[in-house]
Image (cartoon, rainbow, N blue to C red; front, side, top):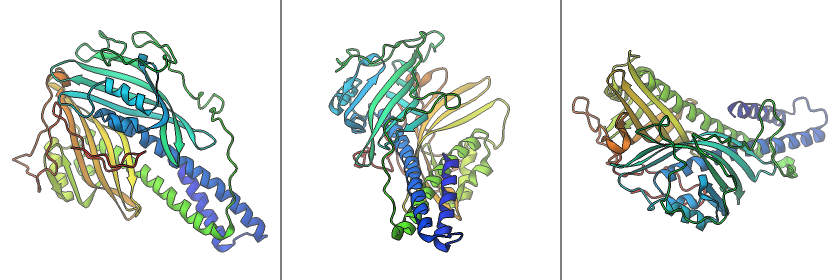
Length: 453
């Protein structure tokens, strides 16, 4: 998507030059008509890129809401006639019934001792020609369980449909295929169940649309698209709507607006890359290089350790996580997932919510799982995006052998040997306690602020 954005931005720049200078224009009226047609086409391409970004935000937000059992907020992501079908549950039709199904999974809101993290990964999205409908394939990795009870791994493939109503993308059809669920302690080599859910499944409105089986049985989740290299074009249904020509007296403003919109989309891509790079540097404990991702007056706040202010103090904070460099027998993976990025109107500041899955340990000693959520701020300085506030909230931390249901650990807390400049900005406890990191953005559909304890 980034390359396409760059190509469009280059084209816009060219037409801006042609418009402002009249360079190479032999017949002014004909040239303005051609320019208008091309700007209309570019407007459509920019809109499609914005639509894809909006759908990714929608589905990733669905995952964040599911984590904390925010059932009302999940249901509000659907169209009024939207449907939900997960595993063998059958089809639930309409927002009210979607919420009924979700409530059958357990009490609304985060509950002490309950973990239901649902990572939303690997999107493949196609938007229909009409610009108002879309399909998307996603993968979900599920970490679920009850403290002092049972823990589960799960894998789900979604084949979803989306609809734009009043300029807002919503879920029109959510269809999750359970690939496997397994007891954490036994693993998928020994344990496989059809699904996990309510003991007394709520009666659906319609039977399942597809009879499918889960691991160890095999089922091929149908793709909504063909092979992108060898197959034919995606079925995008509906004719391309007639595009309204742009009057010559507003071409200049239209080109300027397109340029700004493309810049904001490029900003989103740049921030996502920055967050990913941050994860790769964490993996190999490249502390000096990682600290250089932070603005001079930036801060870092991780796992209740308090706030370290300024690039030098950020670097001091990183010493808490081990000696810099690659070390034999040390695993320090920090996988960066599920970004929801919003660039502010000024184009110089931004916020992002993202997820981290950590795989840590020392060979021959112990392995550790960690799950976290970031709520970060960024600043653009001299055209380069940097971290302004890096704030990680620990969701769960546990040894590999014992798992999250048996022996979760508390967040590390403030170091006496390497104390912070300021105390933690938010006091909370990780699983099995409950905490919802505050959302920097309102509900994508209702636009209402999602309040957290």
